[in-house]
Length: 330
Image (cartoon, rainbow, N blue to C red; front, side, top):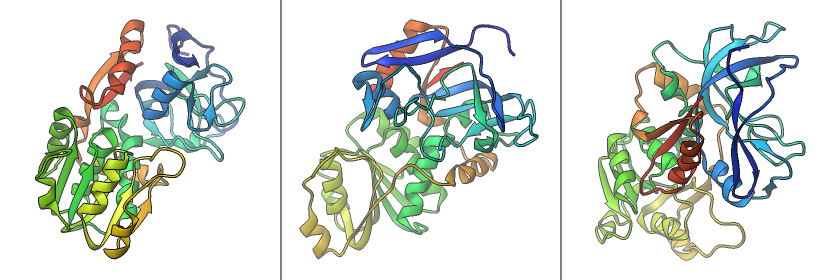
């Protein structure tokens, strides 16, 4: 194994996040050991930190967080499956019944926020030579955006509206442009996410609540609602042309939610959900290898040895006005 303690970011309970040493990984059949380079802080990680739960998945024991990562194979799977030692990789974090860094099951499914982790070789995706490990940490959230575009249908030469330009929304802008959208209008409350969206290909940006939103009117073909907010969904419905499609990428609050169903009906809109992704991570890896640039989505990276900095990084990631994607360096 590599030298140095196997430091990990572990959630013990609500408001109890620690950087601590964990045991060295012991790979099981078909598993490889990966030396983690970068991990991206996601909304579910923030929920485990702040609430001790992500939706119905409740922390009942300490859990290593994280499901967005890049790294290098340190020990290849003993059965010969998967990539060889030294291969740079990212990971598809879905298991058969859970997700890396998830408290849905007991024992919990540990995540990848550790210097060294054991992972099923089948989950690993080798990276093209041109893709840096820092960029590759974006593959998982970008796959969420790519799946949202798949749910949107063909956007080539169409006008797309993206509401909410946090990491998923900003990457959805990039996805729309990569899939040939002629125009992408990006909307957010804050200046920084709008600037990031512009850097990733938005042809115009608007502040949420800007009166010019009325000019978007009924002529967007597709709206990608990435904020997970009631006002965001209402804006998406109002802005989409008759017969258009609204893709709900952002997760709305649990329970019954009021929305503009009468407007959706009279405009004959299609409202479709989008959750996580299937195999779109392979498309993202290929696109990065072909020159797609997503690094504008990254605003911060912090070394895991800087414990106060790691804790601050979670707070930074929680504030959409000052951050895009926040990475941890392992």
